[in-house]
Length: 302
Image (cartoon, rainbow, N blue to C red; front, side, top):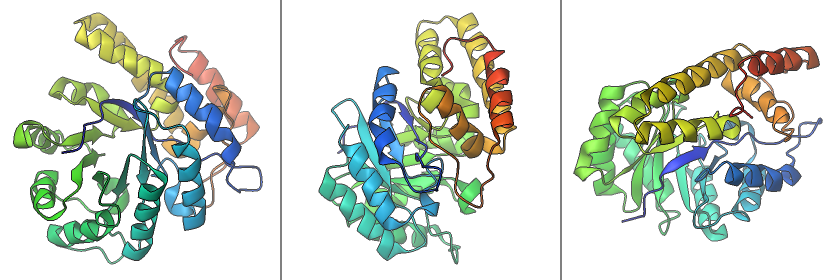
């Protein structure tokens, strides 16, 4: 049984230079900021990190750099999902070799299966390439088009995958989420990944989160957790409203990945622009976004 990871985990943006190549030099400052904000770790090369736009070699280099900053209270989970089970297995094996805490993968999104057992078998091959560290299935149907019951996914995976440890649950099906939390008396690590529904997940008993907004609003979300635990309901409501309004304003700038990546510049960490086919933001738009967020007058945002 692997130790559960609790708290906020950032899904980092991949820093890039003006020419589009990855910028590893920004990661040390990035890790320092997240640790200062009391985050529990990072989930790298996922959706927010534009993982599917990166080469395997780039993903390995990014993982190697992030692992330098891993500690007992700051875990590095490497997303290794690709359209190739062979390629994903190679990335998983590499993650284990360099000492990453765990791996995760989306299901097969090219020639998608119609049976959940096929997804489990796909994940089994990947997980077995890094058998000494935990494996988490990455459930994000809005991106993958794979919308199966995660309750069933857990029940099948715990039998077939020896190092299965849980789910990164990025979906709005709170009924399925609640069911996952109850399986085997809460044994499995369920990382909730839909930031807009953070408060709903918190009220259901979720204690592990992976999200893009924790990169620049980690202080705010940790404050919401503290207020909730101390039963300061008015604070929870007011801070949650700020979080939701911030997310809403960021989404107006071509979505959470494009808009959010530009917010990082306001934290002092310039992660550059996104890769094609994602849109680029102009200096004017970036200034508009900054003004929009500063209007909220919260010292817990970036």
